[in-house]
Image (cartoon, rainbow, N blue to C red):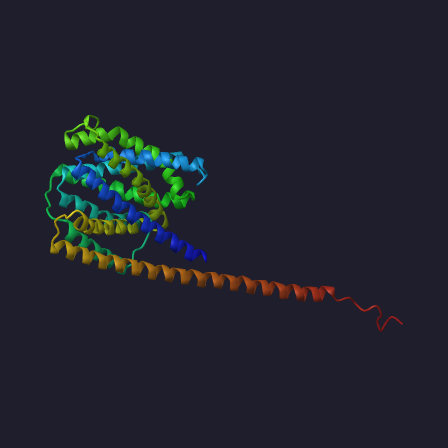
Amino acid sequence: MGEGERFQLGTVGALSLSVVSSVSIVICNKALMSSLHFIFATTLTSWHLLVTFCSLHVALRMRFFEHKPFDQKAVIGFGILNGISIGLLNLSLGFNSVGFYQMTKLAIIPCTVLLETIFLGKRFSKRIQFSLGILLLGVGIATVTDLQLNALGSFLSFLAVITTCVAQIMTNTIQKKFKVSSTQLLYQTCPYQAATLLISGPYLDKLLTNLNVFAFKYTTQVTVFIVLSCLISISVNFSTFLVIGKTSPVTYQVLGHLKTCLVLAFGYILLRDPFSWRNILGILIAMVGMILYSYYCSHENQQKAVEAAAQASQAREGESDSLINVENGNAVVTETVGQKSPVWSKDKD
């Protein structure tokens, strides 16, 4: 199996792991928050990150991966930024209607495309932009219902979109710049993400719910679901860094909207959530956009691979031509220098 095939299999595995784990944790958290009334989302996320770090530390001790330190300022800044983006997303949900929050999530893709184009010089073809437009239209039809605007909520949503985009772009660029794996990056940044949310989480949840997380009655059932949610989060956090590192922040956001559609479908099938023809139409349009995006990305990657192979082949041919010329030159020089004058001459006698 060639290196390209192994990379493709690894990418498919990362995408599959991300989808399965994310849909599972959404269903688990929905049961935890809706049925058991544990509504402290930010504090729960901080516990997720803490458990993820502990599990990675155990894996490090068992030598499942190697610790690779790099720029500590980048690690701390990236970890705190990630924690802030999670907190801002939760605040955006708390201070806005559900429909406006969904619009906030939809805005992450065009914002990421814009930032990568301006600051990283990345180019997105017209076909990719077209497929992303169809995807966003479909998700918007399926999820956006009411759009109630307010100044504070809009400002928090703006900050949430910017910080989320920058954090996801940094996830990809840091892995490539410092040549660290997703596991190594997650291990080093998890403590700072967890610390940011552990400190701010109870206050944010108090602000949003008017309830104290420490005063909540933790029954056996609630505790079991919290532990299950934390265990699933290990896979969610790992697959997030893995997908962004292997693909791109935009692809990760496309995958996120696929998860949204799957959650809607599973919610209807398993939990009997209300479902309308608008939801079905939106999901179908979104699926068309995802299929087009996947096809265009695959086609363009194949073209890049062919072009890279052709350039490598030309470079090898150029090197071989130069080598032949050098060998011929050496042969000529050798023949010229190596020719000895005859031992006798006609004038000798």
